[in-house]
Image (cartoon, rainbow, N blue to C red; front, side, top):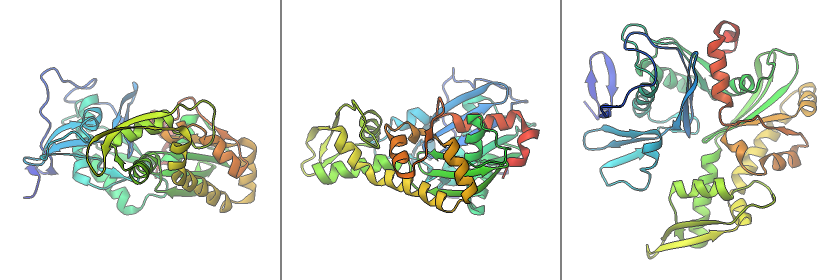
Length: 362
């Protein structure tokens, strides 16, 4: 029977997490529930409830006991387990590079996340709009649909991340003019040129914020002979990282262990070294943008040059990323007020105005 237990006619699943007595969803009832918009990301999952807005934003991480396959924690709690678990507890990210790697773990994670926001209906399943990377393959699309369906969703509609980002920014996606959106997520960077509510050209590269974090970990190990955890490397990236020389970036102090002796160590890195450590992923993103511009018709590139490109996603928060891109492309970078929530807000807007935006669904 494998690592899952059968539940009626549903697919094999991880055992449900034991819930605290006071744990309760924030909305909904056992019979009726609200439609959902979801940004199922490599780094974070965000959920929007129709009529309420963004109600959930936590890491796409699951911790489970390998002895009985019981889910122990998801989201923020599971992420805090990274590097701190005994042999029998495994902490995983079921999505990698923007796609589902482990379908059953993803189903378990989505179920727990949905419970956090509302009880799923017994008879009336909600409709969901889920954003996916541009150029998603049929296999990847099927995995997303199956995960959402097994987690209790009825009708499922997919929207490409760049389209959702453009809607979230407030762009007029119907106009006959080229617009470029670069969504730098945890696992991938989606680069797309839009016009007339469609993606004219898209470039999806398997590089994002997580790639920068890994590059930093590798650099510290190879250059300083010191091992650090993923959470420590991520903090270093956020607090001391940059994509180009910018003013007043503080040095960052890390704790870890010596790779040879395992003795605890403390290391302080200057901003320049952190920037150099993450240089390759940043260069890959810029090259992806240049490749997209090269393959875009001249008229649309001219439109983009006049309006500027739009940077969204967590990677847009990296210091100096706009300056680095502008230096190589000579195109202005525009930043929304909150790059992290643009995609989910756009997906939610598509849900709220379903009939109007139905034409943009995959």
